[in-house]
Structure formats: structure tokens, C-alpha cells
Length: 341
Image (cartoon, rainbow, N blue to C red; front, side, top):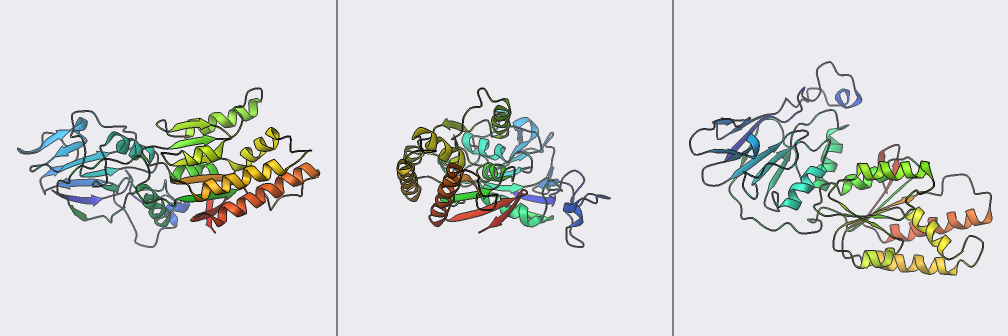
């Protein structure tokens, strides 16, 4: 199967004509992605309506099975899992990932995409701020972008089972630091968006009796992919040690506050808190699955006015430092921008 991508951009291309946004204006002179256009074997154009003999349209016209067995799927914006009249897996998937990258995770979970599938991002436009940021995200998601005019030569691959964890793209341990409303949680979710199985570890209260906190919890739940599992716990040592899927821990600040509460350490003996932190660092060091953890950067604010507040700040700062020393990837998130450390 020969797949010609004459255009890989969104409906208006990238840059969009007449658009002065930072994304469109920031592209190098002459750089342009034309609106998406696809031709297979010099004969079949998308949409796949009434293909020539030997070809079979499937998945509601979004998929195409070619002579000899290679199968292609195009997933445009807003489309969810393809209808069930297609093959069990695809050799190449062309997918718009800019709004809902979790759709790739759903395809992997269903077995439609496996290690042998070529995943190519299309529909590229000013929803992403730069080609560099696009490349960073696609690297995390196991996808690629190709220039307009690229021809892909695809043969039918042997299906392989999609593993429950990461396919080797992710750092084993990633720590994301940031202040309030910095975008650190959104960045953590983005890193794991295309995984087939993820456990979101919520360490904070559920918001009962606190309307403002409950609204924050709801916002996080709505933003998370629907196919992720959720664990509400402060026993991070056991959760990490027993993990069978990648983990997203959000966050270490609320976990530490809960530990202070559990041990009455705000005004009392803080040795048990130190012990819990030691246990967490030890579990982090031996983590069997990739982990992305979110924590508050506490070293840049006003010095707390109370002794207990200062003790909490110091304990979280020390915990951040220890986990960072045991992490392959550490970054500070400021105003939604990533500063790798």
C-alpha cells in the first residue's frame, strides 16, 4: 500500500490565511501545511466512497483495506472509536491528535493500534503553538508528523498485543513542579494521554463540604480521559509498588498535607512524616511502571507565618528534591510553559 499525504494540515491549513495568532505568525517564512489530502495507491482518495475493485471501505468510510491485506484508518476531529466493520487492527492510522490525544489510547486499548502500527498525526494547525511543541508531544504519544507530499510505503504487519503499560516512550519517573494554576496537572495528563491503561492517583479530599474544592475536583475529572482508572488513596508506597499500569499522581502537596493530618504532625511529632517520605522515595526508586507525579514548587513564595506552615513547606521542598534526584525527567511548569530542569 502506497499512501500519499498531499496535505497534513487542518481545514484551513497551517498557517491559516489571514490569521495573526502567535502560532501562525511564529512559523518560519514559507512554512505551510496544506489542508489534509490523502491518496492511496494513486487510485483511492479520501473519503473512501465506492473504492475500485480489490479495495474495501470500512469503519464508516474512514478505513480502507487494500489488496494483500494492509489496512488504513483515518480518524478526523471528533471521531471516536471506528465502527466494528473494519479489521481488528490497522497497519497505518492517520489521526488528528491536537484536541483529544486520548483517542489514540482508546485505539490502543481496543487493539486497533499496536506496536507494528504506523501512527501519523494529521489535521495540524494553530491549535498547537509550534512545530517544536508538536514534535515533543508526538514523541510522548508514539506518533510522528511528516511533511506535505510524503509517500508512506505500508505492508501488512503481524499483529502484536498492546501491552498494559508504556511502550518505552516515557521516562520511568517524571516529576512536574509548578505553582497554583500553572498548568502542571494538564501537562501531566498530556504526557500519558495516548496510553491504553493509566491509573490516576488522587491524593486529595473529594470536596465534600467545600464547594470551591469540589469544583476543582470536578474540573479534573472532566478533563481526564474516560478510559482511565482512578484510585483515591494516600498509601502511595503500596500503590507504586503494586502498579500494573502507568500512574499519574496528583499531587504530592495534598498527599503530604494528608500525612500531616494522619499523624497529627502540624503541632506534634513530625518523625512519622519523615518516615512516610522515606518510604515514598524508596518506592519511587523501585517503581515497576512509569510514574508522572505533580507537586507544588514551594520555594518561591512568601515564608509562611506559622511554624507548622514552615514545617510543611520545608518537608515538601525536601521531598521534591529527593524525588527529583531519583527521576529521569523533571520540569517546572510556569504559565502553561515547560522548563526542563
